[in-house]
Image 1: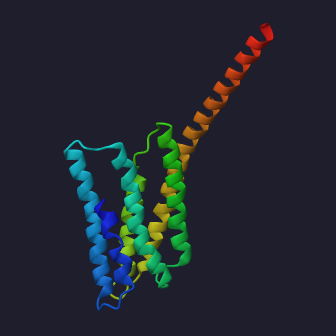
Image 2: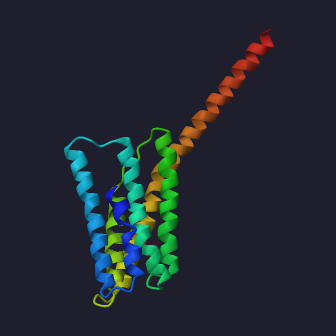
Image 3: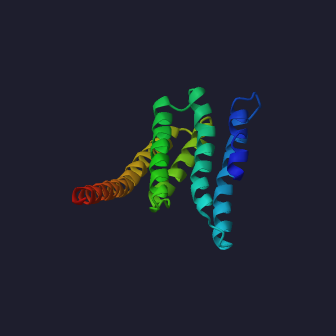
Length: 187
């Protein structure tokens, strides 16, 4: 939850006229990212992992990431196509995750999803520090790679679950319709 509270500070800082604004934005971004790790660890140690937390955590990740990539894209520091890949993947995976969760399926983050988050976090910080860290495009490339790969991974695992569930629902509907036809025919 703290990431959602902290995240709005990132675009405010990036669009401000503050001296060293990029350093401040990176510091706030890192604090937000560290609260993610801290919140998760505390919840697991206290045995307070909840369904709400499992659903809310990915949303908080997205709010934090979007709070950085949107201003960086507007400022021309991050290519639009990169932002579109990241946003598109997040929307796609969120829709899939929601559909799978509604059907009681597994929605835990995979190691690829965690690698994607780490790569995106590094890339965002690198882009914000482009004045002192050259070759940010390498970090951005790695982030795009893991963004696409993890999206494909979730699609590969979750779409068949949804398809199987849909086929099962259709079969039950068909069977229910056959039962009513049979009972109606015998009367």
